[in-house]
Length: 132
Image (tube, rainbow, N blue to C red):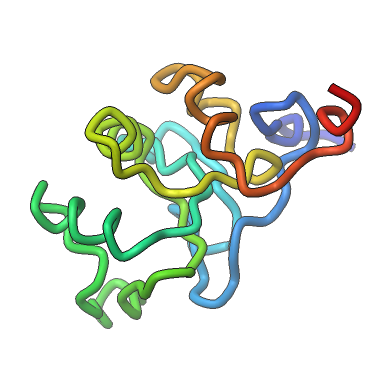
């Protein structure tokens, strides 16, 4: 097989899908893949809460209003979404982080967000952590 190597998650494994209802990802393929064209680094797979969505709106990042021209249905609490790493970190630092699906969070998020912060909000418990 030729081409780029598959993207990895923050645990070093293959990047798993984040969500398909609504279809997430910078390229709307259901995963938090990232490349040079993804300037925002939509790499943190989150399970959004009402508090997180409210804070994002206050920061000027409205994730609840549908934008059909971008194929964006608007998010509701409980939806999975690939969030910009810096936006997730802002919410974490303000005390209103969204839950994180580690297996579906792109390792590129680690350029912005410390792994410990992501792990502290994990909603999935990967096999490699269950024995700790």
